Structure formats: structure tokens, C-alpha cells
Figure 1 (cartoon, rainbow, N blue to C red):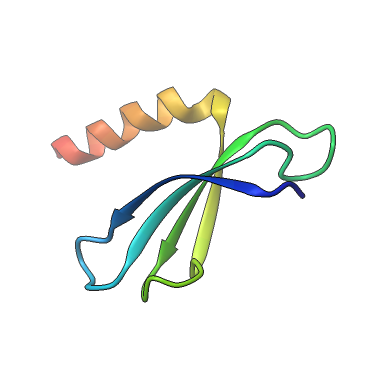
Figure 2: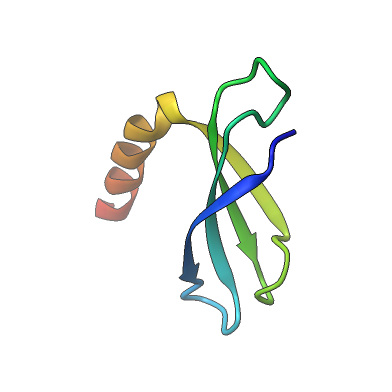
Length: 72
């Protein structure tokens, strides 16, 4: 597994001290794996309590789905 490069940190709106972190991982599952954006949620501003890995090929579709969810 590759090291994560921190891209951005966002304060979690619903919880004081909570954070959303976005990191890039070049080879998350070994040498032949594709890059992902790792989105972590930390409830206390420490290490993420949970993470999701989004392949770079899915980012545009995910953004559109998030915009549609926000509009509802």
C-alpha cells in the first residue's frame, strides 16, 4: 500500500472538531493498482474513523451524484 498525500482538510459541519480529509494514494492495493482519492471522516479531528477510496476514473461521476443529492 502506498503512502497517502494529503490534498485537503475540511471541517465537518455537523460536529465540532470533526474533519473530512482528502488524500491521494498512487498504489493503494499494490504496485499494479490504480490511484484513488481517499476520503476520511474523523469525528474528533484525529485519525479517520472511516475511509472510502474513490478511483480517479469515478471522480466526475461522483461529483455529479453529489450535486444531484445536494439539489434534493
